Amino acid sequence: MATLFSKIVAGEIPCHRIAENDKFLAFLDIMPLAPGHTLVIPKMEIDYIFDLDDIHLSEINLFAKNVASKLRAAVPCKRIGMAVIGLEVPHAHIHLIPLNHVGDINFERPKMTITPEELAEMANRIRQA
Image (cartoon, rainbow, N blue to C red; front, side, top):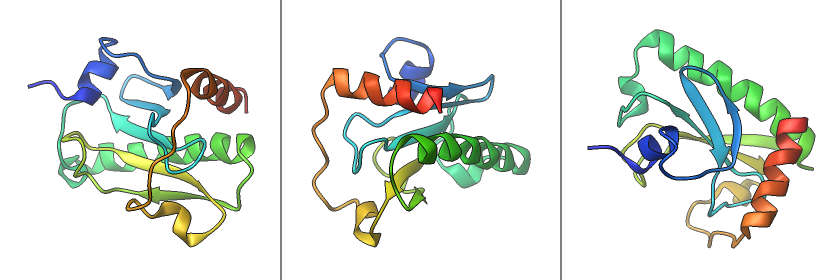
């Protein structure tokens, strides 16, 4: 069964794409913990990130590193935090979250409400970085 993320990869559900290659996709989280909160996913359907073979696991981390660099250039923050939770959507994904304080990566905090226009502007800023 196709996941929400598989439908995003296929273009059936729109997203604010940040970066993409033949194996991976990075896009903005529509319910972010912080402005610029980005998800990095493999395009292949795989539920658990540690079920990726070693090559793909290495490659997704290198892809995420490149995205984090753009994110840090576009969003004022001290660091880009990285989290792998994997309980929300049964498709492997990495959260990249701009951080100024440790609590900024607390997933129990309420999510932000961001308009589609704000997401589009943020995506553009990150892509341009």
